[in-house]
Image (cartoon, rainbow, N blue to C red):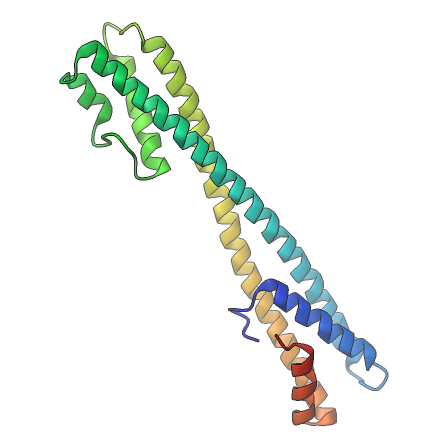
Length: 206
């Protein structure tokens, strides 16, 4: 068992098996109660980390789905405004370059699209006189900008939580690995290294 690569659920399963082993033989293992307390605490920690990780993953996936829908809506609104500018001022109007900048027709990321939408909104507000479609276009842009900005923030928020939980999981896995090693050393002192290694290997075999 390698703490850095073994899934959290596997660590939890191994811990449960070691607990069962210690409970079964606690009558003649003088260290059983102490190690049981340690492994039970680790089991509680692992269970809590696993539940939080699953919740964070679900929230992150929901945020990604919402961001994607917001990107689609934002791209649609951006294209509509570009088309309206072309139809009203002509395809070669400098206004089109003012609104489009280097974004052209598609963004590489959600953040690129958000920047382009904000530039488009700001540029449209500066047009004087205002074209007849400006009011509806600005309202549409304001809505998709708010929704996309929120979706981007939510995605980044849950991604940061997931990264932090991965760090916590690695620490918990290392503690499990160390606790198992300590139990093995204590067991080896009583029954010998070969028997202790085989005994525990049988309990935590993948």
